Structures are given as structure tokens and as C-alpha cells.
Image: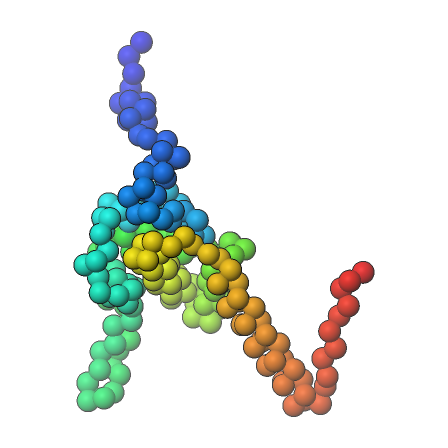
Length: 185
């Protein structure tokens, strides 16, 4: 029985687990532990950038190379135009796709993405989340550390406390007092 080209191509592709372990071996870090990053996105990053991140002097330079940073046009001390540079980079496209997946994530990065979406709108929020993912990836690969969501959870807790303090101040200025609900029952 002859095998079609599509079936032959799928048989030649490595399984997800094999690809994931190979990427972990090359980078010494499992990027798929980052919310939104899947094996295909990590493979795209490896294909575009390679295993060596020393060509970038910092996480900012890495994000700028991908066109995920604002490119402010300043003349005479006045900001004329603010936008991201138009760059054709598959790695940036992959990170934007990962950022879109964060919208439904229950992680701290998902909360960041939803806050940015409410504040900036969807397109700019995706770029902001992709920028954050780029900085996280650069840090993990350059320091060879595993992803730790507890650092982002601490930032999320700090953000929630600031929001609560703002609500208390707003209620006090209007002559009201906030009383916490007892949810123990």
C-alpha cells in the first residue's frame, strides 16, 4: 500500500517529548515551563536565534532586535512618534502568538496580559506581553535558571495590595469605608 507524502512527512517529525527534551538539552533550560510557550514556539525560537544568546548584550537588546520595544522618534527633545519598529522576525511572531495564548492563562503572566489589554487595547497588550516573554527567555537562557512562577506571583500580590489601597483611599475620599467579606464559611 503506497504511503502519501503527508503521512511520510508526519512519520519523519519527532514527537513532542523528544523535541522538548532536545531543546532542553541544547539550552539547558526548559522554556515550555513558561506559560504560553509551547514546543513549536520554542523550536521556532531555536531555529531563528540558535543556542547562543551572547550576541545580544542585554535582554533589552534582544527585545529590540525582535522589534518588540517602542521606537521613539524624537526631534528637538519632543517625541514626534511612538511605535514599534516594523521587523520581519519569525521569533517575534512566535512570541506574539504565545502572548495571545496568555489571555486565557491563570498565571501571573496571564494577569499581566489582561491588565495590559484593559489599559492599552489588544494589539499593544500582545506586544507588551511578547516583550515580557522575550526578556524572561533571555534571562533564563543566559543564566541557565529554570522558570519560577513564584517571583511573578509575588509581583501579582504586590499589584493586588496596591489596588486595594487605592480602593480604600477612593472610598475614604467619598465618605465610605470598605469592609472585607468573611469568606471562611
